[in-house]
Image (tube, rainbow, N blue to C red; front, side, top):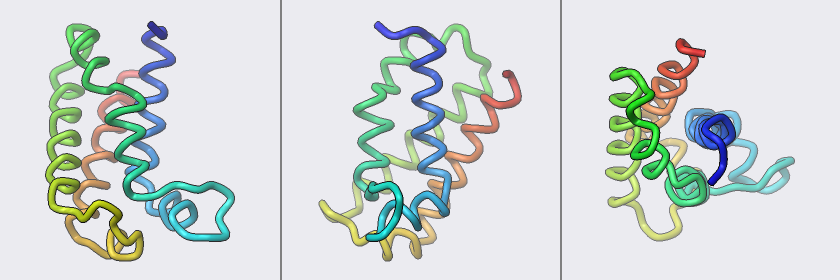
Length: 117
């Protein structure tokens, strides 16, 4: 199992990609330095980073505000992806007010952890 610090850092990096309109604008369309997609930002956080497992293992070390920010981000992200088609159009996702709310949840999540570091 990876260390708390590495695992935590990967989760925060994944949340930053969800929060960043600039990252999405560059990575979700051809010609950018990096490649990603609406599906990939979800998959990286929820599956590659196994964020749920991290919070099960380390939840006792975290503040209530940090845990609540995770529950909110997870809930908003899951709700968004349940209603999306299998391969959502990146342009439509960026314009979607519901995606804006997911990005805001990711920003709040990052802030909850930044204030304790």
